[in-house]
Image 1 (cartoon, rainbow, N blue to C red):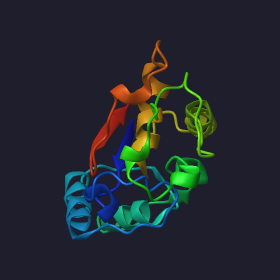
Image 2: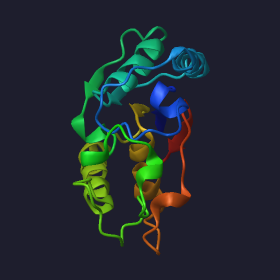
Image 3: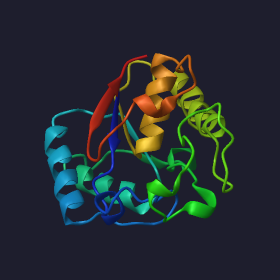
Image 4: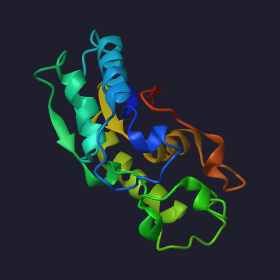
Amino acid sequence: MIYFVRHGQTNDNANGNILTGHNETPLNENGVNQAKEIAKELKEIKFDVCYCSPLLRARQTLKEMLAFHKSLHVVFDDRLKERDYGEITGKPASICEFRRWNANDEIPYQMESIPQMFERVKSFYDEILPRLQNKTVLIVAHSGVGRMSHFYFNGKPKDNDYSNFILDNAKIINFNW
């Protein structure tokens, strides 16, 4: 079983959906509180291993969880970073005059494409899953990685539109494989 946790809220999330990407944006006060609530919700689960994005907001969310899982082995993996938004990192999502999550569209601004991001997340799961049979895994990462994870486990959308799955801040989704 995989417990996938999206990090708590940041000011970028609260201020109109800024394209944070790989920026090192910290959790805001609400995000810290959200992370503490998730930690309480998952405190009774015995995790065998944790994989975490190395970006600050994911690490801060994980820190709250480690209060209940002090001996948990944590692996930081760059493949769990949020989508690279290229030249529009730090800009409002409203700047996008194109469909950001449609794999059929050409992606401007030197952004990471949907197929590139999917392959990055797929390579992560293809590597770890064979050795984690019958294990309970915690993953702490980002909305875009959660989206790609959803489609990895449930199949790619037939119309290549990845926008119909959204993962809010501080939410947990489970995957069985």
